[in-house]
Amino acid sequence: MGLNLPQILGQLEKMSAALAEQQAALRRLLPAARKAFEHAASLTFEELDAQVKRAGDRYRGARPTEEPLLAVFEPPPLDAGLVVAGADGSQIYPDRHAPALYFAVQVGGLAMEIGSGLPPQVRTQSQLYYQQEDLHDQQGYPIGNAMVNGRRDAQEMKALADWAGTYAGRPLVALLDNGLLLWFALQVREQNQKDVDLILQAYLGNLDRLRDSGGCVAGFIDRPRSADVLALAHLATLPPSGVSDEALRVNPFRALTDRALFEELLQPGQRSACFIDSSPLNEDFRKKHHEVLFFYLKTDSRGTIARVEVPAWVAKDTALLGCVHAAILDQCRSTGGFPYVLVRAHELAVITNEDRQQLEGLIQQRLLESGLGARPSQKATTKRWTRSRRKHRL
Amino acid sequence: MTSDDKAIGRVTRCSTRGFVGAVRLPEPEWPVFGTFCRAEAQQGHSQVIGLIYDLSIEDDELARQLAATESLSPEQLADSQVNRQVPVEYRALAVGYRHGERFVQSLPPQPPLTLAPIHRLSDADVRKFTAQLDFLKLVIAVQEIPVDDLLAAALQTAAAARPESERRAYLVEAAAECARLVGRDLTRLESLVRSLRP
Image (cartoon, rainbow over all chains, first blue to last red):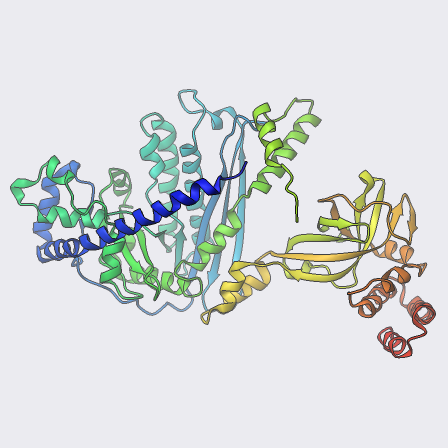
């Protein structure tokens, strides 16, 4: 039985009405949010920084840099001879109903020499994980999807560092289809400190390689939902004596996103000021000199806003930051506001359901040839029976 | 693995009259109009011999987006033309089948299996299969395809699979067979013979 459309259609009408009402409510909030942000911008860096320090570890929002909050920056010209690389990953999660317990990660990437007229170099790296130590965490429990995501993210960064090595000494911007912070670490660190640290150190090591090769790196987040800058705007409205858990929690702009704010403030091609991500995870990055900063960028004339994350060594070097800014805009021109190299990296990386079925057929065949019984669970088999139900064509 | 052994796609739809193959390959590896190919049938007991007569590129949203943009860079154009594996679909007319070592030039007893791999016919097999010209009748009988162009392309492929010294004689023999089959339509015959000139 497919989706019960007659039942869903009635709910869709209510859904669209509710969403329209939500949108209207958010639009009403925006002027106040903008006013709060302008107030924050009127404070000196020292005043704002002192307020952030007053909030301490309770505060989850952006921290200011020395760039004025309301500043906007035009893109510099694109460097001749620039190389732009992109990487993206895909995975098959471990499935106890599959013919064998395993997981797979595939990372695709390409590097394009701007102005050369040459086709980009492309690479795809696929890896199967099937050893007991791959499939179980340090406490002996089967690993979850978050750990697989962590491995994938680390391999994506390795792919970018490899490109930087290939083009060492040439100006290179490496783009990742995600933020730079390894969010999986926050999800599973408590249970898997050792495993998470291993992945994190490998990731940071590849950031070192990338920097040492002379390249720069940026994480590109399309349609960001974060409200870090709005949290800063709210914090700035509090009197110094009023900074408390309760006051931080009661943020009137919580339902808004930074995207809504910067849609109004930026013109096509402009970037915002840089801000520092205050996630506790950023402390690990800071210790290794890769503290993550971010800015917002209007990537096209339709008003698409992206969040771009860069390590401090990029953010603090005007030339490198300008290079990232110009390269992303150039990449977004033909693909409607999303970088071309990331579109292609995804295409190279993606593992489709058909790929997975083929792989599992091969696994089953090889295991049978080796005299090992291997078949999907009965539950998976019965799901396949019903999934392959024939439809009559008119 | 020789280039002849490499699959050029898999069967997606089929009937006794022919089959449709699909593949994602970069442009230099696409099959061409008039290529002889084979696909397994009858659980491996036979192979249907097909003659490729229609190639189409499936819908690809990225290609459409890039085609519509005014800002396509030379590197992006080169990427699309050289690196991207474009989904190609092609139709093959069944012109015979192979049973063991024997080629038969008539419609196959069964169509190929869905998802059966499709291979180019090797030069040796093209020579063997086209030694008889009975398959021409099967091509001429088909409606709604460019029969004359397909006949010319198939016979040129068959001639090219032979040593240079045999090609002219082969084409002359093929032209005579065509004259027998379409002799009532002299305009058509003249055009066909022209396209068979080496």
